[in-house]
Image (cartoon, rainbow, N blue to C red):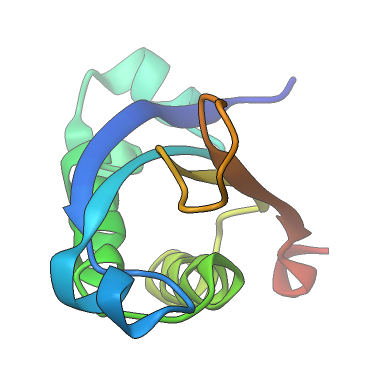
Length: 123
């Protein structure tokens, strides 16, 4: 069995971008984060202590998105590091960060970085 906790399309305002103006003015981002986490115990106990608290997971995303970076890849790495250090029993994570309306002269829904990492400490 595989069990996951997922935060879908978190909408945040942040200051990420290669151009200095992007880090000054900021823009809108969507973040989706899936964490492989065994919560089968919580299925029986109905106790939040037996699962990964998604409110705490959101705080990790928000905290890391609040730190300006040039690259979304850098933000993704920081989020992954904090998730795995906070919940070492997390088996993997799948993270998508989308910059809405990126300044590249194209009509598109956004530019996204995607990372899927396996926590080697759980293998």
